[in-house]
Image (cartoon, rainbow, N blue to C red; front, side, top):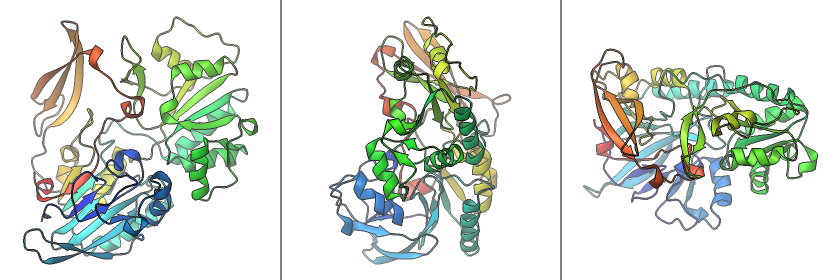
Amino acid sequence: MSMEKGLISVDRFTESSQAYFLTHLHTDHTQGLTSKWGKGPLFCSKLTAKLLPFKFPDFNLSLLRVVDLHIWHSFSLISPTTGSQITAHVMAVDAHHCPGGVMFLFRGEFGCLMYTGDFRWEVDSERAKDARNKLLNVLKNETVDVLYLDNTYCNPSYDFPTREVAAQQVVDIIASHPEHDIVIGIDTLGKEELLIHISHLLNIKIWVWPERLQTMHLLGFHDTFTTKTSLTRVRAVPRYSFSVETLEGLNTMRPTIGIMPSGLPWVLKPVKGDGNLFGSLLTSRYKKRQPSDKLDGNLGYAERYHQYMFSVPYSDHSCFAEIQEFIELVQPTNVKGIVSSSSCYVDPLYYFGRLCGVNQPPKRFVYKNEGKRRGKKEVVVSYFESGSSPKAGRKKSRPVRVDYKRVNVSRASASRRVRRGAKIVESDCSD
């Protein structure tokens, strides 16, 4: 089944469609959405509709269409080909990613399509179990033709614990550093459950910046957070503000450690010769640094980073095993990843095509070998042929040469170079 071009767009607002759907308010899903939006109706969850005017002041609220959870909603479209009216149906499903985050299930004469946005359904989560059961009841009478999947961690190497386990790791780190100030990197939305967990177990308030406090109040959290630094030693700061230089500066005043809760396997380090950023692999570290320990100014960036920072595998995206379980639950005919331009992109069909009845999985990115040639960085990107493995299969490689002097990656975008969003059209639904 397929859908005509120009009918529906999800998390993509730069092109023309008749109906637009927003899964959640993270910036990488709102590209093209502004306070002056006027292209058409915007469908979203009730909580997203409540938060949206704060992110986009003066937004025309008459364009918002609230989609309640786990209930079919009908809306009308006009076929660009025939000019006739089409009735479509949509259901929002709890994504358990961040406040207001939902998946969308569509059905109509074009078939049945599901778009997950970002999501995490943990096996032991009661909230996820409830959403899972409700989705199962719906899918008894539906076959999902195309599943647009959050494939952020679509690789078996991404095997991190549940958020409950990771949150306890954060609490343990804080409790084991009673003489230190704590700085936790978060986004403008999300990780609220982690911060509430810390506050309740340690009986402390959490500092947040003023705009984040307003968001907390909109979410109904009025007593846990503060903007007064004198009331707490634990501060939640914007993720993009994290740097070795910031932590080194803080440590000249008081012993301070940073905690980065993320499933991402890399940290940020400067490109050689300037202050721009690039990705590097990171492993978690839980060694306690004593306040009396002297810092080694001769250490490299990564070593300096590890003197101050703990990386904890707290992720709001599904790990590989959870992705597989979700696909087995939905049993779609086809799967397409929504993270399509990351350098570590893996087509979900490579691992899960067998679950969808797809016999020939496509190529997938395997690894990058780095070296230098004529003063420039050379990255050899290797792909394995369909059905092969990194050990046994034949591979094709292509060199990509990068001149470090011309690389310029912003702090806000360096940790995730992805392009999200789908304009659901016929070309997207075919291989």
